Length: 155
Image (cartoon, rainbow, N blue to C red; front, side):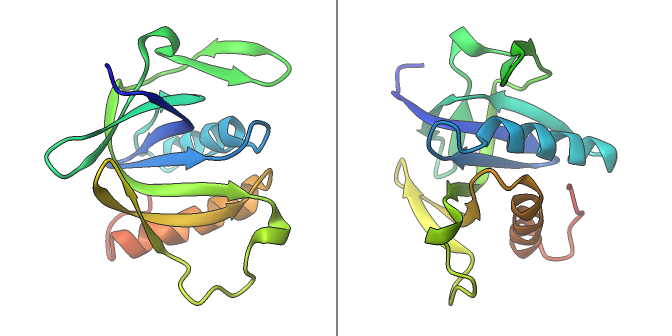
């Protein structure tokens, strides 16, 4: 993969991949691990694509996340180190989550589900509080429901 890597996590939940962006220490890995486990507990697919760095490409108008070779199947667990994780090397990203400090988030945003453009592809995006896994899980569940009305709840 020759595209530059972006600082983010990417996970696959059922048929939906989520790109999680945020500053170092904002809880990307913890949230990824929680979301993967939530999908599995509901009997759905939950896999890591990449932890910490992701290659993004435009695959025929779809945003694709690819794992860099050097971190393939590895996830950082703070206080433990790198651990092996079930993974898929590429996934179609349908939701971008930006982790931000709570004081920078609108309590009642006019448009909670936004759009962002990455690699010339428009993708739904959502702002979630950094280091608040339970609130982020609820917001991401809501966001995925908006994207797939009537579809399965993967998390």
